Length: 625
Image 1 (cartoon, rainbow, N blue to C red):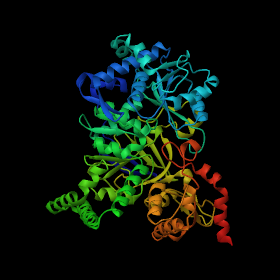
Image 2 (cartoon, rainbow, N blue to C red):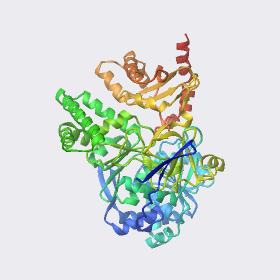
Image 3 (cartoon, rainbow, N blue to C red):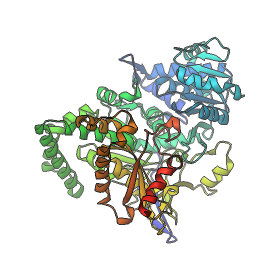
Image 4 (cartoon, helix red, strand yellow):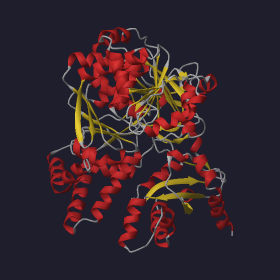
């Protein structure tokens, strides 16, 4: 990357990538125009696959074009016009993309609702966005909208994908997805193509609601220009194209998955796969063996835990083989970082692959992965190092909804563990005097829908986006994220501590699922810890430790001893002021529907601290007594 790194006024550090953005394929200015380009240049290329009832089916780009046109024209028949909002409330599936691109193609705006959202949040999002049509997946999502529909004056129609169990199909407000397509198919595909050509670069294309960790979700308005800028900026670091395979499983409401599934998918023309159930991630990965894999830290942590548990249960020979492979892989990695690849490092890598890594990688769906990515939250160094040693270097990037996920990315030939890369082409990045990360680029959003005050606080008049994240730049323009600005703990002694770094160290353990470090304005740090029910439950069963519920498992003294050992091991590597003095267990697994975490598994700290206020106070009283 062509990064110029300078310091201005001695208090603000800048890194700027002056590389020009590549022109989009076919001169496209919108995602629907990219779809038209792919349909004309590779009509028989496989755009999507979906697994239903145990079987995979395919859709070509030509078929995707025709069906998207039918959906878009069907929405227009329902009265949707330019500037109107169409909401999608569903898990990832081809119809999600059809509705998204179909709505954008006729000049409408698309917004997504997490499938875990409770009725109150559905009502807020549909009401705030003034959605005219909502596309729901099944009875579960239909019931949420049906419950609140009378309080949504702008909502005119509900489109249902899976109609099983729905009793109100004959209501004038309800139409099936199949009927929607049939409605649009009465018109010529060229009518849709003509509508697609009318879009302007700065028109709002989508509204992405932030996860709302500290309050009501805000709707970030993202333009067609923003989307195409991100597609172009990430095209070179992704280095993807026809023939690549992706599994779409993280929520499409989130900008990171939207980038990989829709934005980059349409730009690069690779195949996107949709599985049958979110709980079958490893099964789907094993079947597809994708070449591109995006995972939030929680996904990589669980995969690491799965491998560790598998090795604990393996035969002595397999454990010895894995240990030798790890040593060879670590030597290869560190040697190549110092002096580049050579015959001996290639030999070491080959031996490690044959004796252990090949089998493990294919069992976990990593056999063909050449692009492994992590985003949306900080990830522990130990996780990155583990997979790098296995020959799956995880490339981190940094971005947020408000800059359309485009800020920094790790170059394929220069992955630095613990750093999230350099600025993407066209991106200016700066560190403010208080450590806050600022970005400026054509990918910066238009503002928050119906919230000019929040827009003014986030997007300055000079174009700089205030991210709310804290970080540092090194001399090569590589960015390291310290924490969220609002999450930094300032102890009673005045020490600034990043809780996420400590939490990530704890969550590397296969026994720990959640960790929330607390200590703002306190004399020392404590933690609320949630055990990993699957691995700890298996551990308890093997030792004949009886338990019934999640809380009962956590209450076992043997489990407390197990977790205390993890805490002690982590404390040994921390400065004294950063150590965890006491911990208590979460009494249940955190759930988005209960408001504990966001749909992307970010802990809502304020909600957890309020919910466990008594337990927190007891930990501080214990030290005082």
